[in-house]
Amino acid sequence: MGIINRLLTGPLSSHDPSNNFLIGLRGFFVIQSFLYTFLLVFAPATVAHSPNAMQASASTLHKALKFVSILFWNEGIIYSGFILLSARTICLPFITKDAGSKISIAGSVFRRGLRLWIPVAVALAVATGVFHARGYRRVEDFATETNNISILVPYKIDTALIYFNSVFNLFWVTNKFNDQAGSYAFPGQMMWVINVIYQQSFTTYMTMVIIPYTRPSWRVKGTVLFVITAWWVQSWAWYSITGLALADVATNMNFKVKAQRGIKIYRSIRLPSYIVYVLIVAAGLLMQYIWVAWRPEYRNQEIVAHGGLYYTGGLNEDFDVKQPQARDDNYLVLLGFFLFVETSDMLQWALANPLLVYLGKRSLSKSSCHNSKQLLIQL
Image (tube, rainbow, N blue to C red; front, side, top):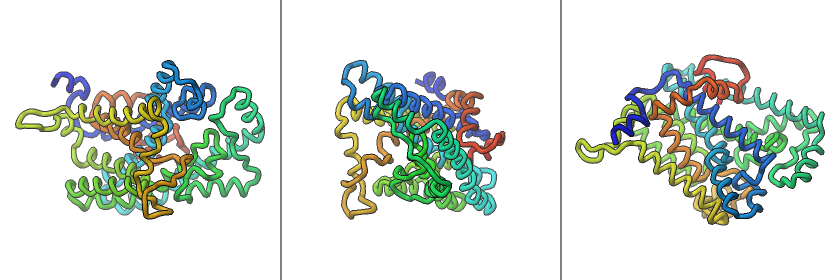
């Protein structure tokens, strides 16, 4: 068992100060995003939970393709992964070298909107210009000819005022993030993720200021309580606080070395940490597979088990199925995967390869910057 643990984790080491593996992790999600978008357009039946996949025959091959989709181009894991990764990275300038610095926190908060607003404004302007030049009708004709009911014709932005309001609202809406012109006007209708990332940035900023002034044990206990509370009210904050907690334990609590030693069971007997991570990932994937191949009608039942935050004092029984949700299955898959990444030298080395780092630097980047810390706070 010790040999297997050594092969999976490599030598004992502390947190990688360069953080290139986090940029590479972002590049990994970029590849998944491309696969999801490409297949949703040209092979929508291979994308789990897409309308075409729901209508396709339940053959063995089809079930296998949907299972592969869960692993490699899963929409929920992709957007949830970006949200969690954002919280994992934006706090680093404050909790590492400049721990407790007023300038660090003020600068991060001030620059946050600009670092996101400029790329979003440019991207939406380019997309709008291309659709006006080539015609919205082409998208509708393509969808009709290929019987693709999984893609939508983007919302048409006709005036400069509509364009400005579409970009502005992406940084203002606080609920029902998907229902806004800026997201509907963009190919794939996924721009709402920027909205969530921006809003959750302030949850991360407000929470991280206590890190230099509280005991580690208190922060861990407080994080668990915060995650449970945020889960109950169905807020994206339970993803954000989990990302912040991962950054805290990796940077300030020597988590990587402790995890590589294993979990103490009895005296000198230790359970390899990766077994726990495998169980967490397996639990999430099992839920995903059940909702796809066995009981798809129960997929959204977990959403009911939350407080109805905006409209009732009871359970969340009247939720909008069209809205993206902070889901338990996505959370478990990502939590287990991120724990692997945080503690495995092999995975960190793989994620820090030049290709993934390059893709990570180019994603939502307004400049060609080579400073890792500056790049991280752009997401």
